[in-house]
Image 1 (spheres, rainbow, N blue to C red):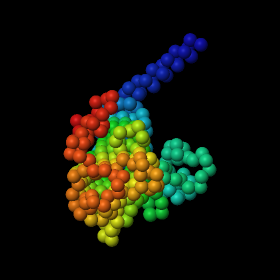
Image 2: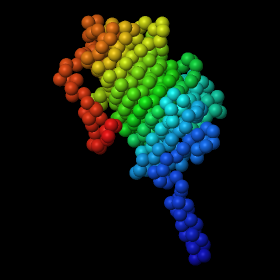
Image 3: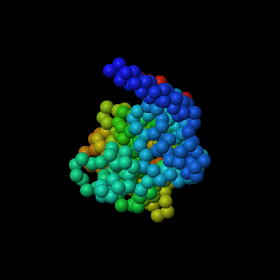
Image 4: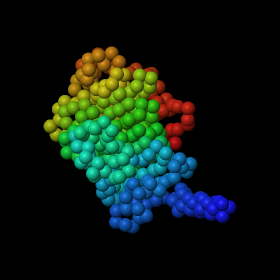
Amino acid sequence: MKRLLNLLVLFLGGLLTTYAASPFDNPDTLVVSRDGTGQFRNISEAIEVCRAFMEYHKVIYIKKGTYKEKIIIPQWLTNIELCGEDRDQTVITWDDHANIPVAMALASWPIDIAEALRPTDGRAKIGTFRTFTLKIQGSKITLKNLTVENNAARLGQAVALHADGDRLTFVNCRFLGHQDTIYTGNGHCRQYFKDCYIEGTTDFIFGPSTAWFEHCDIFCKLNSYITAASTPQDVRYGYIFNNCRITCAEGVTKVYLGRPWRDYGYTLFMNCELPRQIRPEGWHHWQKEREQTARYLEYNNSGEGAATSQRVPWSRQLTKKEAQQITLDAVFHNDDTWHPCR
């Protein structure tokens, strides 16, 4: 028995030593490259070696290339930065849409994702929330200089970025898709988009999170709706677009700024450039009763689509004093000290 215990101690000690000596358990940068010149050929492999709840900042540097991967950054990972070599030439892509049969999707997904997302209700289609290219459940995650794309045909909802985590930052990124390009999926989480390009067709920025979009280009590919906020009643802020520019594809003539996916949806456009394709009424109620709760606001916008004389009566123009109170500090205030620009 004593000999067995000694062997067990040695075995456990060996495991601990191996873990402590892991070449990746440090703040050094990991390099991903499809041509084999990095430490990893796939982004998922680099994410997999990151230690849970890291107290240091870990950069995963991704060289130019197209990475066809369906990726989850799990909730136990923090302080990770995915940094691309070139925004337009470092592309993460997948092609699921909501109407793909479950069996067909499971056959193409990585094993761990297939097990995590396997439906339990026997549904025939995968549905919107399994279509993501990149899903972020962890907190304090940063993306820089990357393209995240859902390349599915226009056959249903198709999410490129599914952002569930808190304290997420996206800088100089492109998000490409059609319907439901970006899903901000957690009502009590904060997300910051700066200098990003976002395109889509219908409700292509949607969900319950508090998200600030600073100096972003928003490209509308069809006559439809840009946002579909579902801000919870007890959350003060939803979507804030500041100093953003909206543009439209050729042939697009009628675009709404948003419609409330759920009661109490909050969306504010301020200091933005709105093109002539923005409908004079600006907003749609989705369901008539949501006119009573929707929080739809504008301030100091410019361009042919910024005229306010025909806006729906249940939207509102902020006063200068009210607008001055809408700051990053105020919107992202919480019990912690997180600020995306520090």
